[in-house]
Image (cartoon, rainbow, N blue to C red):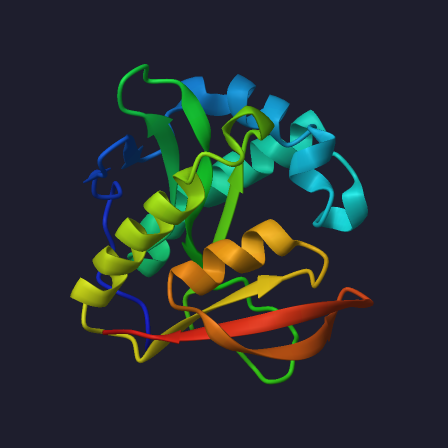
Amino acid sequence: MTNALPPVSAPPVLDTPRLVLAGHPLGDFDALAAMWTEPRVVAHIFNGQPSTPRDSWMRLLAYRGLWPLLGYGYWAIREKASGRYVGDLGFADFHRAVEPSIRGVPEAGWALASWAHGKGYATEALTHALAWLDAQRRFERSVCLIAPTNVASIRVAEKAGYADPVRIRFNDADSLLFSRACR
């Protein structure tokens, strides 16, 4: 894998005006698992099916494992003022079997608890995460894959600089593959 960054044992902590992005501690599991059962969170992913506790456990393990393997990964998002868990955001290489191929390209993803929707948190967190990725000066671009019906996430992606969506098929469903040049 040529596009991995040097491995790190823990993700960097990113501070935004209202949020803190940091690694997922084990204590996040209950909030993470609860979020991934919310109908508004899963409506446009996983065919609208809520995650089981085991699915969420495997997700938490993957989030933790991305950083030492790839040098990038997912952060837990928290409100700075309250410390409340907001959701997950970051980059991965999921080795998706899609055309055009995105293997080796950081794929951005995000999911926020429904109580946090509409507050601008996703855009705030994503723009700071992208600034971090840009500063690594290792990648030409990053991508994100969004269901065409997920208007809110499409808006977030576009505000963060993702553009030129290409309609692709993934998991027997239409998806939009957005791209953003690293700066």
